[in-house]
Length: 290
Image (cartoon, rainbow, N blue to C red; front, side, top):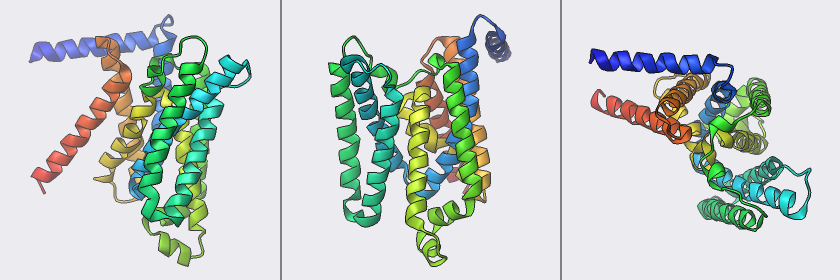
């Protein structure tokens, strides 16, 4: 037991030394972007969990691949060098958010069908355009991400996303709160619930696009929902849930990076396994001691 603890301590020291090593900047960028991303995951994830729109966030994240595929094709196949796949991802995510939002408001009985269709068609379009793009493009890098490939530009993008989300969250906190917990009450109070709901979906879409690089399209929803779901068991008000979810997310990403770096494993899956294990442990503990 003592030997195991000592080994874990040495591994932690090795990871910290690697972070401070000037010759390994990619690990430092990954760690910093993980901490910054935790803010966005915590805040938007709390709204997603409270509003119970995890499946909508999942559909948006998978539609992102369609936009990425089109962007790559226009860049490499058509020769439009100025087109960045990120542009296509943003357009696809926002379009999916608006379509799903209107369907859920005006045709709730068909909501699951439309969401499933967008989910599948978005993925299919992305894979088709990637297949037709000249050269080799590995779709796995988008599906499962690689936080170790982030750059200084990614740091700036995620920092800007944090500013946008914190600003919108502070400015519209009460309105978003009303829309998440009681949409009918919000309308009675004179709040345009439809507009704020669509705004929340658009914020979710932008968050998904910019954070797909960390854990990929497939697993971004897990990191959006699991920390917030854990925090929801202990927080009494929404802002406490956001703070706790952000802290938990930072812990999951940091520990996942440390373990994946030490044992040479893919970081995204390790992060999700840690988050999922803690979530199941919390559920089991509350079930046993209820």
